[in-house]
Image 1: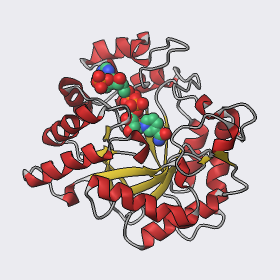
Image 2: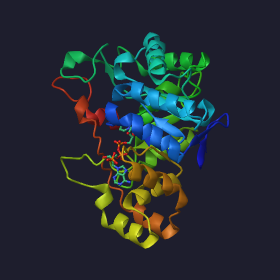
Image 3: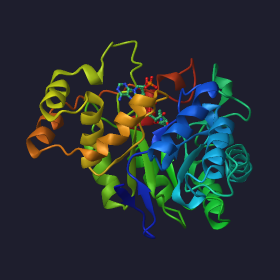
Image 4: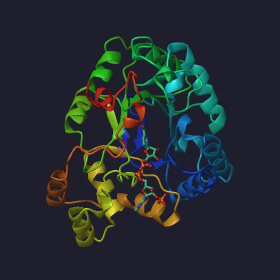
Length: 312
Ligand SMILES: NC(=O)c1ccc[n+]([C@@H]2O[C@H](COP(=O)([O-])OP(=O)(O)OC[C@H]3O[C@@H](n4cnc5c(N)ncnc54)[C@H](OP(=O)(O)O)[C@@H]3O)[C@@H](O)[C@H]2O)c1
């Protein structure tokens, strides 16, 4: 499988399985089936509330001899209520216990947003802590400790803009190696991508199929005419076109599915290549549209707005 290479030459499979909104009763089968099909990269997070089931599936796959731990790339993320240097390792221990693993391949700060301990999703301003009270540099120190203790082989961030990255890079002993952000043909993030490239930071695209949940706009990535026409002419599905486009831009993709045929279809993207002409047509689809718009961090008199998360 095509990979992205880290600074020490470790390689992450460029296509992985997403597990957000995979219900606890379906994620076990999804992960086990995916590994049977040949997926080697699983994207998890404490916040998805299903790491125990994911862990059971990984353990079963190893038990059945389908893969060894070494063959797999497992990513997880530090939830917002565990920011701050001293909170990272305890949160990571919980994730490792849930996933039944001794180490993660990659651990990410999920959001540049801090919540009070124990908060799952915020409802009021007092559920938040500002970045002046708990700076990202403090949380990054905890991430570095995780790396130094061998609990995570690589560390990085998610949903960070250029300024968030610069803030931690200025004092980091170990530089961030990954930024996981929303990316697909409607949100190509060219500037952030160039900044990351210049600073040796790899990118992973979340919601690479457009997440299929934008109730506000009813915009559907996979129903776009350009994507559908290219799919028809190349004997691909619209999902494969969307995934190929991002992969061919050198960015990892982590499509979520709990459906066997779509899991296989997504993996088989790797058997296809888009032409230069296809790539040029898809480049024109960029409209800066976020399906995961970050507005859920906005509460009355709260310290975070979607605009300051993406742009400040
Ligand atoms: N870092 C972050 O803040 C963050 C945020 C969001 C997501 N993520 C990660 O990124 C992963 C992917 O993002 P996402 O789950 O939001 O969205 P996505 O992967 O873009 O889309 C998932 C949706 O597409 C459907 N689907 C999957 N394969 C398909 C295909 N071949 N054709 C048509 N529909 C298909 C899925 O339904 P079925 O299951 O029924 O197939 C599901 O409804 C997440 O699972 C998570 O691991 C990270």
